[in-house]
Length: 143
Image 1 (cartoon, rainbow, N blue to C red):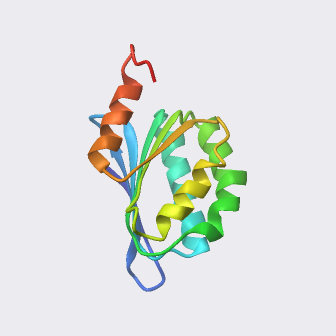
Image 2 (image 1 turned 90 degrees about the vertical axis):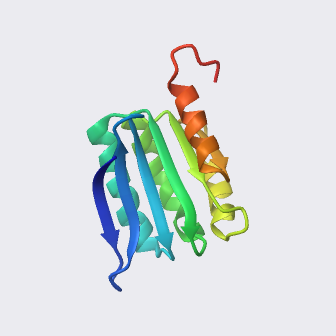
């Protein structure tokens, strides 16, 4: 893994790390704690920049350590981030959530807004998400 960015809130706490997984050729985002709308936008723009730089068709978004919802940002994600990610070449997006956390509902809301621009699936197990992305990258994958 190659660390691309580590974003910190005004409090000094890290709320997002972005890595390029050199072995699997995907961007891995790990969101932490509580995120404000500003944090989501700033972080998502950094993720978009990473997708554009590394031209990878896959993204692995880890929300298991988020402590609150991010529904305040789903409209912006739909209008700006999703089309931008698709333009950058994103084709498969795995989002890992803790099903007991408030963030899970925000993830479901985002899923309903992708509208075929790329394939997105929600997982509660990171290993299943990784496996799915690997299958998506296989040349003979039935997806």
